Amino acid sequence: MSTDDVSVVPEPSARGYYGPDGQPQFFSDPAMDRFVSVLVKITQELWVVSERLDGLERLVISKGLVTRAELDALGNDPAVNAERDQMLMAYVHRTLAALREPS
Amino acid sequence: MAVQLQHAMKPAPTPEDQARQRFVSGLRMFILNDLAGDLRRAYDDRVLPDFRQTHGRDPQTGAEVHKALRQDPAFKTYSALRVNAQKMVWDSVTPVVERERERVGAIADDASQGRVKTEADFTVPRSVSAIDVHFMPGSYTGKGTVEDVTPGAVYDQGLAVFSMGLMGQNLDDIGLSMSRYISRKFPDFRPLRILDLGCTIGHNTLPWKQTYPNAEVIGIDVAGGLLKYGAARASLQGVDVQFQQMNADQLAFPDGHFDLVFSSMFLHELSLKTIGKVFGEIHRVLRPGGLMLHMELPPNTQMGPFEGFYLDWDCYYNVEPFYKAFRDQEPAELCRKAGFSADRYLQFVVPSIGSYGAQAVDDAIAAESHEVNRETTGRLANGIQWFGFGSWKDAAQ
Image (cartoon, rainbow over all chains, first blue to last red; front, side):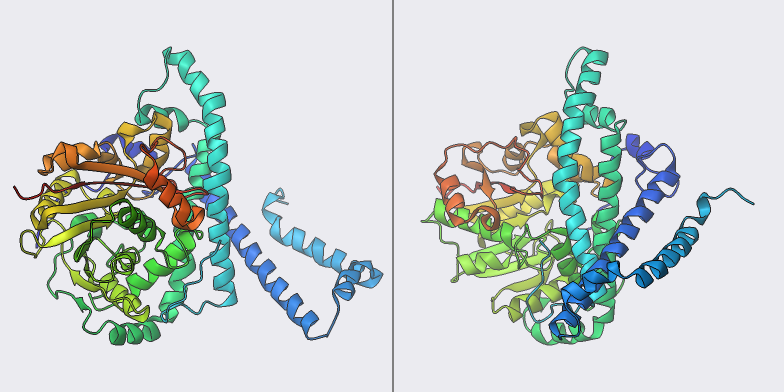
């Protein structure tokens, strides 16, 4: 069978379009291209959680364990809200730690 | 939007896999419709006026458009997201395929029996082996032997995520749209031997058998694992098609053997030198009066510089190194150089049968001319229309 000794890069002038890792680079700082990648993957994972949670809620409602109204009413319960406030602050400190100045 | 394959080798994704895949399809919808619209507006509102001011004229080529666009934030955003979404297509299906390797392998072993011929010592051309074509890990051949159908499963499932439903539930919209167009436009043409070049898993090969049930239909490709997967896929769907591992630039068929030689989304993955050889081989294996037909990306010669570059983006940023060189050719000229008569050339734009319905295809048949320079021609986004070209081989004197 024949072999094809062709070049597999589009054109020599395209070299500047790729970063040090050989991947396409669009922003002046290659770290930004990597950052976009992380951001879009986190968005994806957040969707995964949303879709799974939606599945869980549909199931518990269809099994008659709770009603949609009971699930929605949780936000009106002061004890639940107090606990959620604490959970949120721990979450914020954990996820945004990199934004703090070194102490 | 998200396609769920329905044949017996269909995957069993976990809820997480399914959610990730749905996200990637949705992300691509957003990029290819909404961000693509933003990109066009940025071009009209910022990039084009700046270019005119600097140069005193409009951009003449896609290369000029590319250079000017690269500085614009809308282009950076569109492009960075599109590269990531492309890689995420494969990331979203690879774990499923790995997990089901044995089950799918066993089904394929059985269902492909007697329907596929692969070669143990086949040399895969560098255009496939030296790069991960459109970021597909391991390219079309994978890292295993020709018996390993994993690349076929990756391609099938990846295409289902990639296509966002625009290639149909069986990923066969191109084949269905093209075969309907040809069969209705040329009712007296009734091919009995049909060859599909670079057919991968045969998803666009099957519609030809469905359109012409009396025809013997053969699909060839350089990737043996894809063909074996495709043969099983065809068999499980009850469509009688044969598959053979073969390079399209060296066809192992006698002169004048076929009535129709077809390809879809194939030529843009070949070097110009190889395209020349392939066209020569097609001309040889066609019978007098037979038809060569290619579904492809529309040519730059018939599009504006922005529309042309929009498609050529893949050449630079989606591991499609041959894309632009092919699109820079005049299709009629490629046919003429291979020995087809200039007055036997044909080209058309056919509406996607899945998006627009069969009546729209029939309306396109009745139309005299087909506008190529539209933002829907060849663009995988809402309202996709497929570009086709080819030539009839001169009848015997």
